[in-house]
Length: 102
Image (cartoon, rainbow, N blue to C red; front, side, top):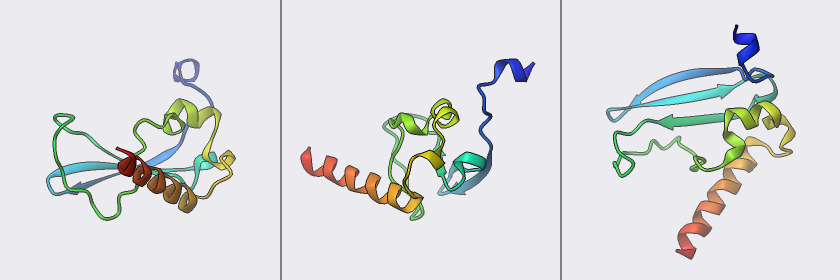
């Protein structure tokens, strides 16, 4: 049944749950064609809730559709022509620009 319902190719990732200052972070380490991509996610009780960011957290990617599972299935990370380090540096630079422009 899953074969007929799932988007293919299937995205494989190893999920780690890490507790940090009373909150659970889900850290997905992607495999196969998305190997090298690591995404962390936190569930909040309210969108305005404040929380401590671990020093290992990277830039915000919530609104970036490239990171959606459906997008990663059809356009995997290996086809982005960018390393993880370059991606993080670029996203950080974009975030800084956004802060400076507002």
